[in-house]
Image (cartoon, rainbow, N blue to C red; front, side):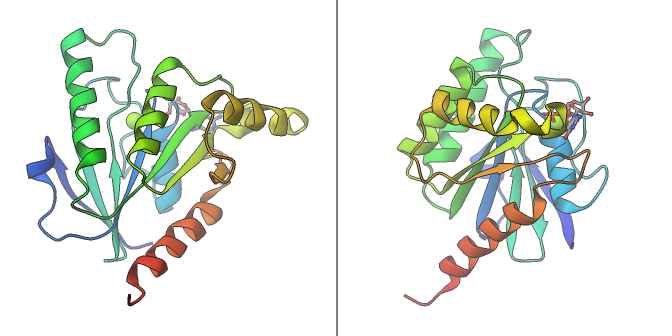
Length: 197
Ligand SMILES: Nc1nc2c(ncn2[C@@H]2O[C@H](COP(=O)(O)OP(=O)(O)O)[C@@H](O)[C@H]2O)c(=O)[nH]1
Ligand SMILES: [Mg+2]
């Protein structure tokens, strides 16, 4: 996969000059976001894994096949983050979601082992209210037995209270699962956005 790191933007003004569809990856700290992004890219080390949680306040832009961006958003929900940093995170997140000046779709990542938190719910609400194309990526599915996986997906989706048609992608960066279906969704959206009116 042809992927280039473009920029780390501290705010909306720092986004790349060239406008292309953006696919944001967003999830709680430690949910497996960096691992999933690397898996999605078929790379190791593009997105930094297990950096200092709560530290990155940046929108990291990767250009994929000269066609779209993957945007790695800072993880949320890290307990030791100050109120001030938390407020900054929400501000950037809301500005990013509601900007409406660039085509944007969102993957919200959820660890298969945990029920969604209040913050996961709030993030989900904001994404839905922004009316953006929205999919869930359930991460680390190798951590639960194959027999209980469907029950876990169901519970997570129920708790989040997302629309029934919201796509969800079971993934495991460790076992190499989920990337192909995620890319199908991405490519479908890209094809739609490139169709003449
Ligand atoms: N078993 C398993 N562990 C994973 C998977 N993805 C990430 N992890 C582990 O979960 C931890 C957090 O992963 P990381 O990608 O840094 O999460 P981030 O903080 O959301 O970027 C690390 O110890 C990873 O090795 C996965 O698919 N399966
Ligand atoms: Mg990370």
